Length: 338
Image 1 (tube, helix red, strand yellow):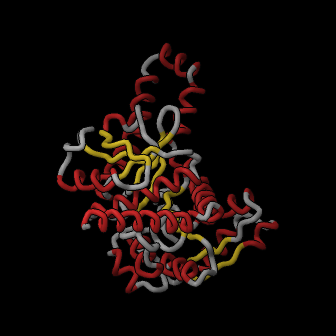
Image 2: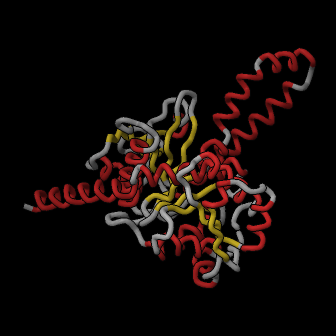
Image 3: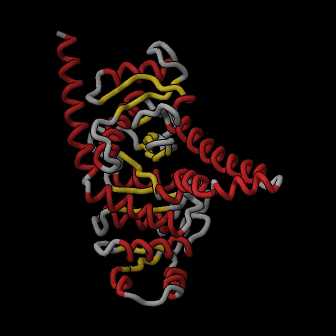
């Protein structure tokens, strides 16, 4: 029931996913009469046999506090979805609703994976020829240095197993490339990442994010969320400015017509619908956060991302890698002490 266009967009997107992936079974959690009414708009098909509706009488509103929403709205669609994941009725959840409530519900009810301190939202950001993964995009705004080590390891695994990067390069977002640059927080993170079992390439400045990107960028959730929303706003703004300028005279309009395929390719690359949802890495269950304004296509792709995370057994791989990292760190501390 969460999201600007719910439940119409979420139900329609779910149907698109069912039609595309024959191995899916979906639980639609929310106001049952409204969900049934939306389903009825799309007729009947074999996909309907793979749909189960679970009623939830409450909805978390955007002005609700995150923790209060979990404690006071136990029958919300977010809480009920997390309950289904906790008791292993489902293998993953997708939500376009309140980000804070989703993070709080999964953290409180599912707990963290062994070795992970805090969850991080991972989002795919497009570049001219490829993409990079940004972690954390807003789950944890008061991070500790250790949390970013977890983000780097989890991001590397996700980039390798889901995004197809053979040996992901990891960078730390900072204000200079030298190890001495940044604040006390980033300098401490730099030291820790240097000793982690990842392909750490050092600090990355904001002005090269989209021109000379690495595969995984780590930062705290405050900075990451600002980067994400600023980038999305800038992409929307540039297309608006471009459209305005191209419509100023007939000659420009003719040029735009000839270049329409190029404009369409760039729009597709920067369209958040194509990327679907953002995995909340670190919680003990697969959880995908879709944009609040998600269209049916975006919801369908968010479900695709959840399916990929399940089939690639992302959490099992994260636990194994974090165990190796912690064992190696412990040996280093013992060796230093002796």
